[in-house]
Length: 199
Length: 204
Image 1 (spheres, chains in turn brown, purple):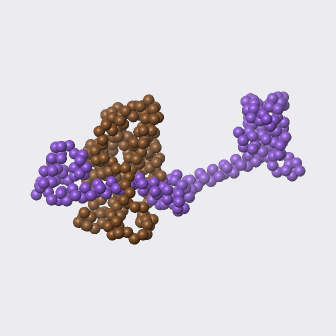
Image 2 (cartoon, one colour; image 1 turned 180 degrees about the vertical axis):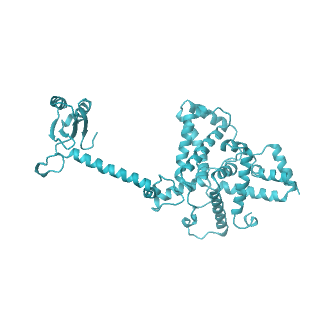
Image 3 (cartoon, chains in turn purple, brown; image 1 turned 45 degrees about the vertical axis):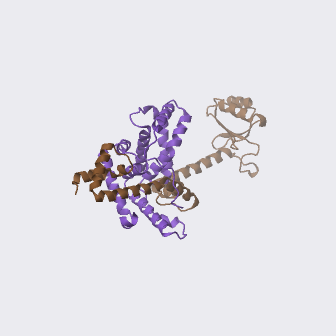
């Protein structure tokens, strides 16, 4: 596996008009328009898969919780009153579902050395260093609580502001800031070598 | 040295400053502080690097790969311990509660099989035959209070003949007209004196 492969990256700022489009789709979903629901699913599936994989850390649960989330969207689209963005509403459902799914199963056994499955081919120093860094970050993320992981992922990857994150995880904005602050400390501590090496 | 409160506030906001998600007044606050705090400038560099790294991490791809790998490699992966997954089926079965349930299920299956066998096997064993007569194609159980006339009427209506039974469960083996088998079965099932009428070869 090469770590240079990148998947769908979010925009730092959501494109203008996306919310309207999502809102229109949701309105059609209220009328049980399956085509609109499929369009909505195709927009959200990659983002939710990423979000849920980060929180759950159990591959088998990601699909299940994602499907459950989208089923709630299908069944309760009429409850979306436009008080928030459609994405906030959908991510909030996913977040609640993910925490509920986690409460059903015990915590996973600490992660094994993933490198045991990596290619044995010699790699250039820089590439190896980069891989170590990502492994360290991934491990550090595993050590965080799902609540902290959600905030980190929504901030760094999904590019959301702390107010929107507070709406999604249903907590005060100060809690979001505090969670992020502590998560950053943990992540930085986990980084191998000194900052100078890393930067 | 900036005052601690301003420093803490700016430091907390750095991730969203780095992703461009702050309001203008908060952005100004952070920028003013950055101009005076070398520590936060370094932190900002770290933030930007973290963002870059995070965006290239692919937990959903990792999750998908782990799932696929469990299908290729026989050994279960300890870190993906969601019950219900194929990789952990055995560990589930080994848990006492599940093992008890599984044992009950197996017991039920054994009992069910025995019942089916007892239903389909005639109580008499003509010429040592251990299975249903080759020409039997359905099994029927009449209601306990069905009269001889009821039985005769139902069989005549379906153009069916008894070729075996009664079994231990008071079932009879029937031979049905080949061309009208479905219709005959449907007629028997609709008869209020018939409790059960099922093909014995598993066809609907």
